[in-house]
Length: 127
View 1 (cartoon, rainbow, N blue to C red):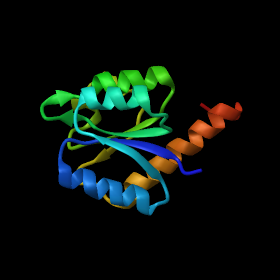
View 2 (view 1 turned 90 degrees about the vertical axis):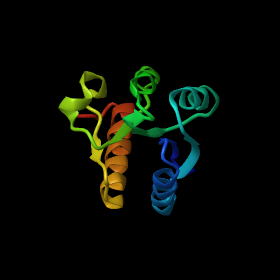
View 3 (view 1 turned 90 degrees about the horizontal axis):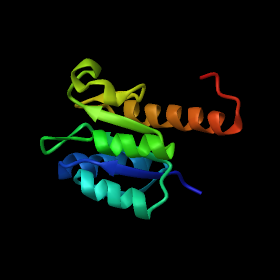
View 4 (view 1 turned 180 degrees about the horizontal axis):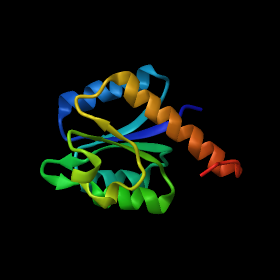
């Protein structure tokens, strides 16, 4: 069964490119949310294994989405043109892929997170 991924991105062309990258790597995109409310609604309705978050959604922070995912135990990758220090503490240890991103870098982070989550679920994580 393919890994279910939620993409949260407000720019349609970037979202489409991200979807192509993710599905091309064998993952399943359950939904592309364009804002905080749509993302939270999707999380409420669809089981997901991982999320990709644009840190800035039309001027609004993705922090509420990150908090919800963290409370649900769902790992996420942050996509941003900002540095970790510029984004603030809400990003926590989640990986940040810089915009413009290389497709391979995004897929590498997704795979790394999924391996870490699998190891954590099995009780073999070194974290």
